[in-house]
Image 1 (tube, rainbow, N blue to C red):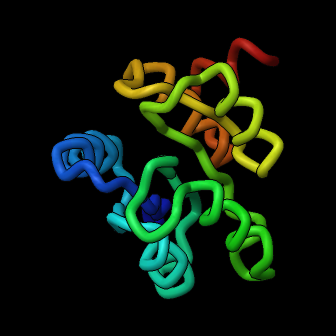
Image 2: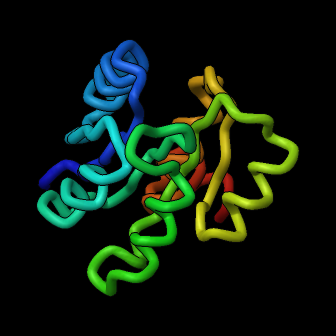
Length: 133
């Protein structure tokens, strides 16, 4: 089976490296972008199954990326998880209204982030499938 592909859009090189390693360890394929403009181009080219998006980006912010994604039919249905250092009080609601499926403040708690990724991708573990039957 082909691994699910996740696009990480963040200008923090250390976060990209750490999150990429974590996701690859969990069996995902990872592509990255470090600014708002290239994020759309990388999403078009790589057709990710999920996008993890920072709000504070060079060349436009994450809200611009969310807006552009929703305007493009081939990208509009890709789930987006926002991962940001910005104040969560106004930004979580705004992110969700813009189409994000989850919001995490940096640094994210590993288990919660992975659970959100699994949920956004429609993945279930044997244990969760057992518990819901």
